[in-house]
Length: 443
Ligand code: DSN
Image 1: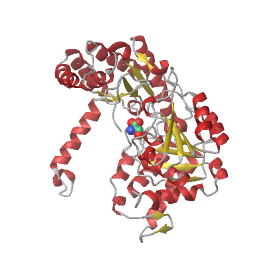
Image 2 (image 1 turned 45 degrees about the horizontal axis):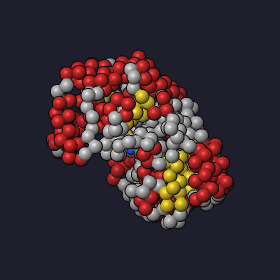
Image 3 (image 1 turned 180 degrees about the horizontal axis):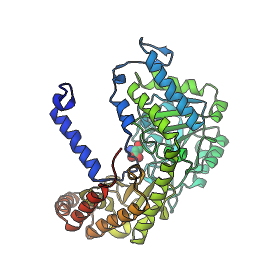
Image 4 (image 1 turned 60 degrees about the vertical axis):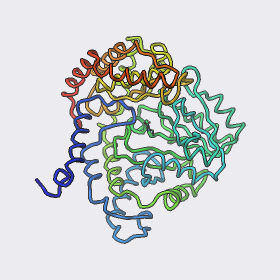
């Protein structure tokens, strides 16, 4: 054994990573924002590039010794520009939230009005929601979805005219439709706003050509790199040709917002991993992967519906599904189902649904996605099996109801968790899950 290896240096952390490896291998990872990176991406993340400081930008650094790092960052930039067809990109954001905050710094003054999708309707914290810095330092006006879970575009028009925002966001964390980017740019232009599309969830689907693309319409496009793009945790901000037309300085403003505005030294190991991700995403096999994600999500939706489970929007146009559990459990069923699926080693997250009758901590929905399972090579056949396993789990716990009263709820959750840990059906599903995963390796 290498005496400098993790196994030798820190047995505890080594063994925790081994435990997590087993969890990721033996379970079904169905959180729509998660994925499995390639070995090449992980090699960059564990590389000596993490040793370097390189504040600034290629050829304009505040530290010496950045000849190699410059090449890495330029390569990442060039690959992103080519893949997404944009004239400008910043690959330094540590992740999606700082990328989005930098967009505010570049385009707004504190106190300015911005518009984004309401968080409980599937929006993202950083699009102006009240508990986020973006809702504290800027005035967030939230638009909503209609009774079918689709963005109410008439309301977006109305709010834009009334509030004259400086910046309008599209993008979501729990939205099953594709955005109509063309309408949004029309609205933004009518009030002189910047239009920023946050494509974190669907970037890989856009690359694969199975999702509408904002690149012809938005001024700014932000993304994380670790969801459907399948890269390291990280972020990017792109400015489109329309963006530069609206404001020729926009690229420079974004650069200054990231550094020195918001961040310090870029994470060069992460930049290298992003460059590798972009190379991987440029291959024909990635297009096949992206389109399989959507096919899988649609089959999963059909299977669940056949078993009587209600879905927001009645299905999906992308990689994710939002289960409406109110008809089965009343308010708060997301907690019961996510815990039950957890016992069966199917990892999902509880989520609010539009007009949720419960609260964000005890929501009435569950969010499911297919990107990670598709990376493992699962296809339609496995989606049918998995949809039925999920329905079996839901059936197994449908006697439970989350009490509205706080004290009763705490007692209920304690009792329910004890019981479901021993539930025979959930344990049977767990063994089936383990067997199913055996045929599908993690990269
Ligand atoms: N946390 C991410 C998600 O799960 O969708 C969004 O930032």
